[in-house]
Length: 143
Image (cartoon, rainbow, N blue to C red; front, top):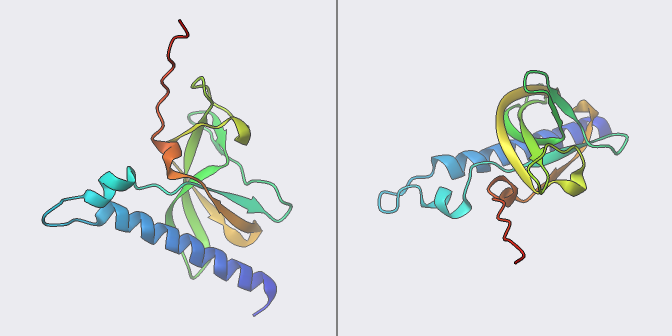
């Protein structure tokens, strides 16, 4: 197996593992404690960004809601063809405005917008803190 196929194989497997974890969080049910795992974790999304071969973050555009993002949630993975379907996560800054600057992102919001991606142009996956999806802004007055 050449280096490119090995990379594709590992990326597909990594995304498949992320999808399996998300499904486990969402679907786990205890007869005594209900969906305790979901309550502990707080959501069923493991956010990530994808790094392309030239070292930049993959950015995708939602043409309906008119926002661009580099933050994603895996929705499905085709291991045979090494393609993934991701939903776009909308990024907000401290003031609640859309942002494309990674350093300014304080909260991510799940959207219904999905895109299919070919993983041959991707070099790496970077996981993010799931807390970014449940942050609330509380601004206390100074006086």
